[in-house]
Length: 157
Image (spheres, rainbow, N blue to C red):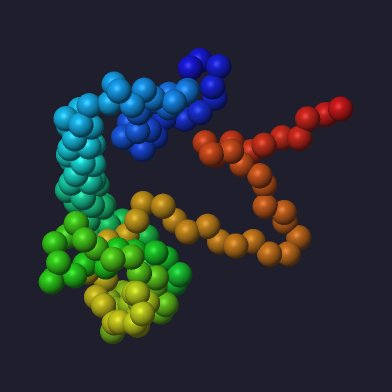
């Protein structure tokens, strides 16, 4: 609908357009429903596998490049590499403490993953491309922004 102001998301491709009214039970065919269900399941699996292989693989390469220019910070969210699982099943973790080596470079980090705290080398972490926003306290009010990142201005009356 052109009258509707809504963004297109991958989730909308998985759901059919809502039909107004009650569907006719006589026209519903079991084979069509089964085909549609299998199609949606296959589509979700494809989207999930592409995300895991392409995006997470790209994150690994970017984290190697970023590590040399921007050091890891406390409270940063990262993905934790697990040798027992495939790369596509990385768990999120929060950095609690950075531990530099003898040369001053950060070599180890203390992270909180799920219900435990672990020491892990920096090379086993995949940094996310988004930085965590710092919670502002004090005098500066946090500006209201839209989903696209633009600052909302109050209308003049």
